[in-house]
Image 1 (cartoon, rainbow over the protein chains, first blue to last red):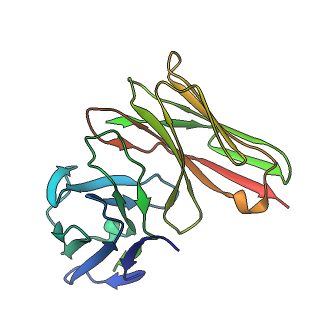
Image 2 (cartoon, helix red, strand yellow; image 1 turned 60 degrees about the vertical axis):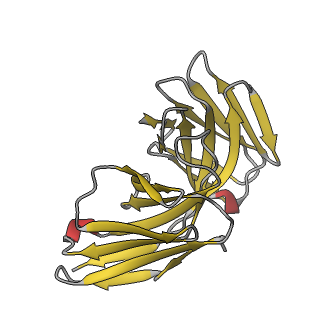
Length: 116
Length: 110
């Protein structure tokens, strides 16, 4: 079990659906991250929030919309996704922000997303 | 962004043997981290080595760092079937984020 909790574990959605992925941590970490991972590939960084502000957006399409309601929660809102967006979506947190001295990342176990 | 490249891509050994995997990177780093990922799970942080360190140990793990060659190695001694996983290095710079290389897939046969 990890200290970063992601829900749901699995999600199947159609291309016209709107859904949200949720991530929660209670370690007092001030940086939170979304990664996308395709099968047999490394995680690819999507977004970074530092002190609840979006600090990095890796040119992610607007059909992915992140939100950080507070320091413990991170959401990823999904709308009008494509089948190629099917992947494992990983949330992570770290003690300090991405532009600091590279604190270790703590990952959740991800949401397995399938877009039909 | 800084990306590590792991070598080999895949490694298969018998239980009890040692496993060594390597990571190369391109620019100056602050630290370098190694992570493990079991199939279908999140990544787990294993060890962090700072740029002014040359070697670090944690249990059966030994990490070395050679900043002149821009490379690092992860040694797992006395491997177990439970060590079967993918291993990723993540070089970190002061300037910003780090990214993960393609990883080494380790299979330890009982």
